Length: 78
Image (cartoon, rainbow, N blue to C red; front, side):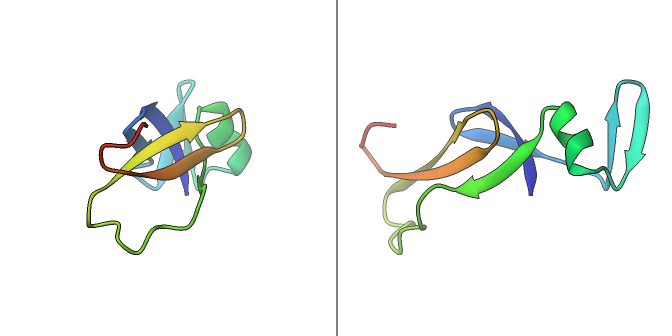
């Protein structure tokens, strides 16, 4: 799944099966077209904790290739 990181706690994925970029519409966009539009693959940084619903916060980090989904205990440092 390709996403854009909006901020530390929000990401945006494609909402439609096509990409509008640079005045063009791409149906079934290639990974390269998605990267050029600012989308990156979403990768889980560490396995999801089993007790996620018991006070864990989901946040996102990114580097030049990926957006990472991360988990932190509630009250912990994000």
